[in-house]
Length: 299
Image (cartoon, rainbow, N blue to C red; front, side):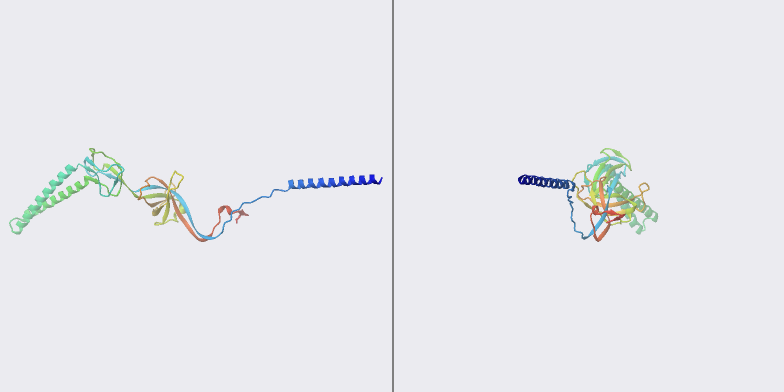
């Protein structure tokens, strides 16, 4: 009986221990399932230091030739000679074409001879007047004839100069409007010359920004490009700001001088002009995404 009693007690104790062990393990697994996973937040650390910040704004603009000249004939006659071709670079004073130079030169030689004859006759009459051989009337007539001949010669010299069309500026012969042999009349357009060593950028400035600009102010010019690589930045200078707003756009036209000695820019191109709005000296700045708003306040 004693042995049977000890066996029953041992079995009860083993069952109790086994039940306690299974309950503790189940409870642990339940707690692990219910506890949330630990979250990791990635941050970027930036030192907050005082610095000088230039606040800018950018507006689109269009390039225009510094001088776009349409040359017109000043004489009537056929075009006898063409020099530079379209696209050629021309210097100031370089001949572009000539209008009937033979006739003009013949008239010049005739008037030069007439003047020389009148001048010599006047000199002779002047000497005779001193000797009391001719009258004052003859002297006046000779003097008048000499003056008329001088004026005619001057007019012929001007026509000779006008018969040769010359470039008034250093630039490019962009368009030749007449061919050799073509007959032109005074006022007929014959050529277009553009000065491209420097260009003008035209920018429409809104009313809120025009007060920030002034003549002589330097700006940054970024030529527009379709390639991924950005083109080199150029320097520009404001040379004029309109006082009247455009009635349609309510903007003010600003003209900016842009250097173009390498001639990589062309009139009509689109570009972006960067203006300085203000300069903040020794201020603290943080990225915009680091600003939060709470109770209508930013922090």
